[in-house]
Image (cartoon, rainbow, N blue to C red; front, top):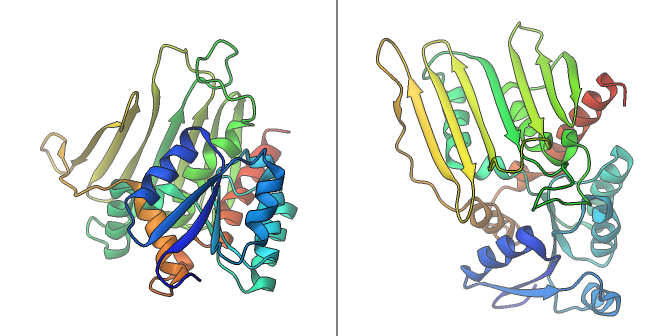
Length: 303
C-alpha cells in the first residue's frame, strides 16, 4: 500500500459513482482515481499497476464479478456495490478469489451505515424495549416504467436491485428465516417467517407512478415500542422522519447524529485496508446471505 495515501481506482459513473467519489474526497488519506469502465486499456493498466491499492466497483450488477475477480487476482482490495452479483456462483467466486489472494472484499450493505438502522440494531442487542417482534421495510421507485425519467435499463428484478438492502437488514436484526413466501410482479412483497414466530415483511417496487419520489423506510415493532423511518428522495439528501411510539404518548422524533452513509462505509473500507477496523460488518458472506434470500424469493415467485 502507498506510504501516505490509499490509492483507490473508482470504476463507474452515474449517481453511485459520484456519491463514492464525493465520499473519498472528504478523506485526506485517500487518493481516488476515476477510471471509465469502457476504457478497457486504462482499466487493464489500473489492475496491473503497483501504485493502486484498491478498486471500488460502481458498475451494473451483471459485471461486478468480472471486474472484482480480475482486481483481486492482481492483488487489489475491492469494494463492490450492492447487489454483489446476480447469481450465487458469481458471488461465491468473488469471495473465493478474495480468500485466495489474501485481499479484502467488502460490499456496500449501505443500511448498516445509516443512523436509524444502526440505532435499531443497538436497541435490539441491548433489549432496551424488549424483543424485536416484527419488521416491515419498503423501497419504492418507478425505474421499471418506460416513461420514468430515471429509468435504469441495466437494473434488474426488484428482488435483487432493491430488496437486497432490506433483506440484509432483516438478516442483521433477526437472523436467518425459516420460511419465505412472496407475491407480485414489478411490485413484490416477501414474507419472512422465523422459527420463534416472529416475521418480517419486505416490499419493493419499480412500478410506482413517475411523479412520486423514491421512498424507503422501515417499521420495527418491539415489545414495548415501535420505531418508524420514512425517507423521501428528491434532489439532494433525503427528507427523513424517524420516530418512536411507546405507551400512550404520540410518536415523537428520535434525535440522532447522522452522517453521510457512503462516507461512513467507505471510511470503514479504508480503515479495514489499513488494519484499523473489523471487516466483518460489510463482509462478502453477509452479502451472499442477502443474495441467497433474494433468490429464495424469486423461487417463491416461480421465477
